[in-house]
Image 1 (cartoon, rainbow, N blue to C red):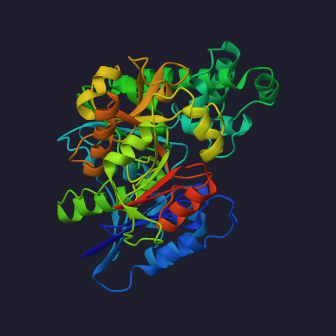
Image 2: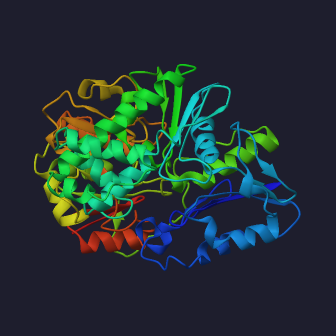
Length: 486
């Protein structure tokens, strides 16, 4: 039976057919699909209606509390109401009819993380803002569910405080970046304790407390409390030496690095938030129905293979590496787009990590975002421990750890850390070769790497790449095997 999966979330609608991962924001060109009519459920309805047309097709789906409202009548019409009360006690439970396969939001996160890890058994933490039946779930090595929603609904607090600090809805990543500038404050801790102990609501006096404290101190204290709560409630549940992490809070690189001190192996997949829900739902169904472990490719976007104009010339990787060493900033567009919110060498902006001013330059002239936000290093895997204090590779840019060298100020955050991507030739041959050529020239085996975008989702097609190149201070644009320079 042919499988097709859809995640019905208000913002991160996404679908997967076993080959192509469609993340709707890449096509609407609105981050998190925001700024649309909140009552317009058309994208979700179209996804749900489009793909079950014959008896040999099965639609696999999951929902969130911010998505089901748009399609609840349609789901009930085609599927019934069985899913409404479904409360799983094990990872591999599901509601199955002839043409429909339903699992809970957090089962989808967990299946994606575990099945992509390669581990034979693992603990799994699925932690985010709001799912369907849960907000935070720990799965032990047997797949049994431990509901931590009443203790670790921390994702909602991150989202709420990001709004209170002026970073908007779903601005938790900005708050995490700001935390590196702050200090612990007991009054902010008390405010967070109130939230955790009073049905996850801030008190009336919260604005007065927040207004008299530096934003960076609020961010730091929130990070500190998050790590403390996870140690308190997750660590005692450990049942083996492997851990898989998924959900929106799994984008917190400090927490993920912290886990490497408690578990021997930690796996955080690339599309770790709700944008990866369709992947996890598909993988869950294929595993349960067909006893098959389906592994999505890290780059699973649509295929584009054309040159935009005669101005492009053949790519010379050595010359591009020399350009970067000379201070140029490169837009790097290769093959299929990555799944998830991290540019991993297919939709990247690249620069010299030795330049102490490069963060300010890129933030001001290309990304056009807050000046405190850091950039990541993509480092050749065989050299990462010479520069970073960590005990295992980080292929999906998912962990933040201390920097051991003063030679790379462009990718070192104010607190002396970096969120690294380790790169080997098997993962991404052309990207590896570019970094290696830069290493031969400079003696530094890494490049500054940030997502290829300017105040919008990561570029999906060559036209969007060229438009961003033209409208920003990017010096050089590489599209597959062709290059153009300003």
